[in-house]
Length: 611
Image 1 (spheres, one colour):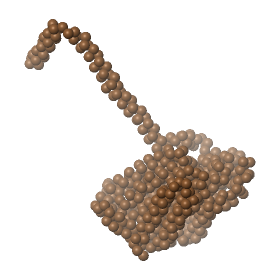
Image 2 (image 1 turned 120 degrees about the horizontal axis):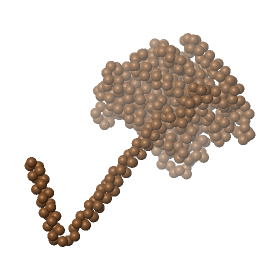
Image 3 (image 1 turned 45 degrees about the horizontal axis):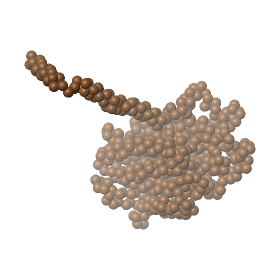
Image 4 (image 1 turned 60 degrees about the vertical axis):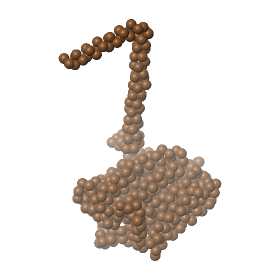
């Protein structure tokens, strides 16, 4: 196979995006056809390349910076990106039909596929940055396709990700300097000195920032409600989770030597636990379908960071498996949210209900994806979570307890969501609701099937996609049933407790949407939730407020300086001029007196200095 084949996952989607952008806005059907054919071609190419190893190296800009691409077991993740691009375009062919920015959406999805593939295939840190930073503008554009009301969220996403990317750029520069090369497969730095550690931390910030970890998360729940569901389904499979966690794992496995139990290992695990628990607590109380999923999108990345942060083989395998699983079930869940929104016109849980009978395919897809994210066997989320739990327990029992608490809250929130939306009697205004069209349902069915397949037959993703990445580090396979039944038993207890909690909450509040109100309004948590819902813990909002205050202060200083020059100084000059004008009366004797007075003053000064 020619080395040029490695360029096709980058060039084909980019070319398709160019054609879509050049087509007139009125030719919607042709835009859809071009986007669909391009996405299908991209998927076919990645399937053809799967399992192969290719390299492509050409001189680029000098200084050790090459256009260096490498296809191997890890970069084979581009298959997931291509598959989601195809499903997203198919879904959007109906979902985006009556919405604005449909041409932009198709074009930027294809362009994102191209740039993500480039970033994952890059074997040079600077080349990777080229594709990585290109995605920053693409992310802004895709969020903006939600409509003008999404403009502030698009700016927020741009600023937050831009700040994380600045750290990444600094980390790349330091790492390249310390390693004396930017070629990624030639770098393996032990965290033994200040500069190497600092470079790792900066690159880690860039990776977790892209993945949407706390504190770089707050744009994701906003985007969940402000932009469209098709973008939110595509997001975890391309723009944030897949790419951010891919690079974090590559840093841990290849670029740096991270020792289990080291300071950097514990730092990543702490970030993972904070992200898990705080995001899932916010997801628990949401009353909007998409916003609830948005907070879970943040929480799930915490599990991935926790697993990889352990630096244990079982944790890294679990973190990467969870990354793949999250793309599947989270994409499916957002697709179901879009389906419900299309058919009912709302995602407000307070007005939804009884849709299980009205939308049976959407309901079935939701159930599979919800069971998967909750960690119910035999679905895929169960197996990846158990691997992460195993690694967390080996590292420190506190990490395991936090991860288990996150699992309880995840189960509780999806019990609330599923019960509210799909069970019971449909409200009067929803009794004529029908199932969504087939282009909406096909992606839901495909992803739900994948969730079941990757669980019941987890040999497929683990032995053919995940485990080859670890190479010699892997001493045995983690596929099949869990090696120990202690952790699954604890998980079963957690699920039972979540069900009991749900029954208690429904009975107490009288409605499924209020199933966790007793947690929301519990005395220790109520005030914290109030602060959180007001945005008090949002770093972006806090910094924005500080900048606004600083702007007011600086504006006041500017007005003061302006007054000094245009008001005070001119006023003094006017007074002096008026005074001088009054004494200059045009008489000869007056000028002689002024001259003599001036001479006396000069003489007095001279003699005064001399004395």
